[in-house]
Length: 211
Image (cartoon, rainbow, N blue to C red):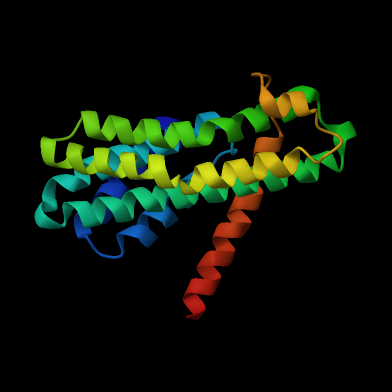
């Protein structure tokens, strides 16, 4: 499946979930996690999936009427929560790689750290695009949500900060990388991260099915 095909499928699945108005948070979280784990967990994939989810939310909101605010909050927090899990998976991948540091280049670590630094910006950028492409009612809802997260913080932002703070303690990783981060080569760490995220997602699904 090409990236364009995946984006289309994700957008349509999210649009249908939002339009249904039922269990929106869980549906979109599952859709997002599934999409993220189909490719390596690098920023290109994260941005692609986040954009597709955002477009699906935007299109699905058109039919919500009075429930627009409630449904949007469920949808946006689902995306936020899924990205926070991706940040955790990325941290675990870096820690795993750090234990086998000879197998990875400094560029590998640079890429992984940079991706963690950029995750929250990708999420907020997607919300801003939704606001710009929506009617005034939805735009106001999105703007209020963004303003609120600006005060309380996003789940992915908090998890990324926790991850970056933990990684500072790894002797194999230069603190200068944590602070600055530079774009390097495509990282095999992203493949490890994708596998870890898949394990987390499957574990959550298993726990949910037992309830």
